[in-house]
Length: 301
Image (cartoon, rainbow, N blue to C red; front, side, top):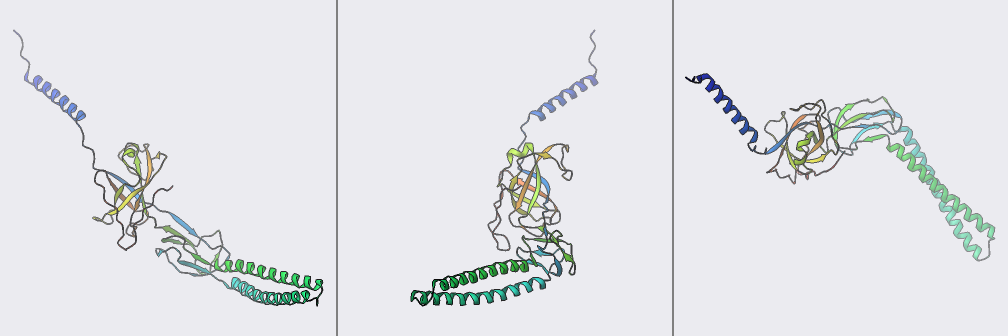
């Protein structure tokens, strides 16, 4: 008489079959494509070192640490006494030599008329011409010297070459300034971009010009509109400060997401979240809240 299979064996077989069927369905089902790509990065920090062109004692520093600075703003002044004296002396020399040139021109015109009337010799004509040429050369030399000394006088002032924020005020009034010693360290704020890293599987989905959202934990509920402006042509290992779900040895591509409307709310070095929609990207603003035109910059290194 044949034995009947025990009930617990049947249950185990059924569970194995159910598990195999579930695994097969999960591994072969069509997964929906994600609607967007979420990346984590930081607002990039770029520094500019400001220094005087010449040596001298600092007279004034016009900005403190943390102050915003516009391009062309006067930042610092060196004591200009030495260079101002040179410029004043050059102006006096130029004034004197211009008067001598005027006299030489009048003499040359008079001698030339008298020579034509045969009242003067050719030697007198040659002497007058030589005096005029010498006077003109002196004026030309004075102008060159004045331009050089004026440039040195202008170099007693330091202007900001970029928009930024004063990160460090290195020297103080009364210190001696040298060309090789920076006075300020500026952090650039325009253009403003987030530095993120693309993994190789996502590289084919992202291209330059795609709009993107930038958010920060410091401003919950507020979204800043930007766009992908640069994707590195070379891969690199994942930097230590970037946290990913995969192993750290994975190769990634450095990417810049520019902010269409730069703002001081996103501070340099701040961690941010970047969302790049695939299907319904946001439209880039034409104008920023302050009335300026939105920036559209592509490329970079």
